[in-house]
Length: 306
Image (cartoon, rainbow, N blue to C red):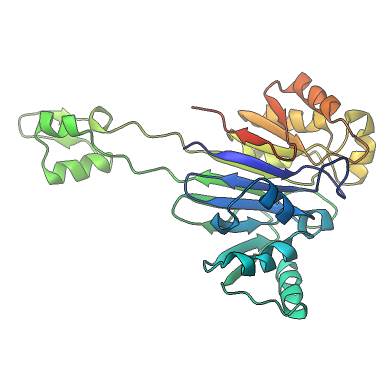
């Protein structure tokens, strides 16, 4: 099943214009992964019928309130959903103190284990892995320490086509060689190539999340060629000086980043509350990078097919 991205919240600073603040869920075939947790996130989870027990990990970009104020409510709500599975939380330094203080002072009961990883990324760093994907943190440029996140699907192991097993009368040893993508050389001079007998590999998905950040070319090396890029687009480019001063980017700058990184598809979001209608931001980005879509509360964004 292709990956999908569900937008729970797309606004900056505070809920406004019918939009809550930044929160997303990456839906894969087997599990869900949440990214940032703005105020009212758990209301959106219920509204959009997300099975929150399927969320394996939560990735927090930075500690500004519009990205974390929904986290205490979400974590403690799991009491009502009988969660037993471990929950991983990954974020910058301070996220552990924030979560543990809320749980302690509210005397909340958690029937599952919390694993909290703190990291201020200085370079691309592996911060989470499971059976299906790896997640790397990388540095963004904002007013406080902020991590971007790169989600990469692990390449699936490919199997031998059954018709080829019979055609070549392959032995167990030969099958293992071919699955390891090694040529098989037989005494009669026959050479069997792995590409001849293996099922084609599925293209592994990739997603880069660039939360609050100024426009800078330093992130290009971390997001090069991803299937889907989310890049904050707080303002129209007429406010580019204001954006830089506040550690944000414009829609045009997000598109320039997508174009330079040669990504397949761009998602813009984190809109200033001054924009009731975000269509002008989308149009500004599309002038530079045509394959741009908007993040908006309740919308599913499909990954490009390959």
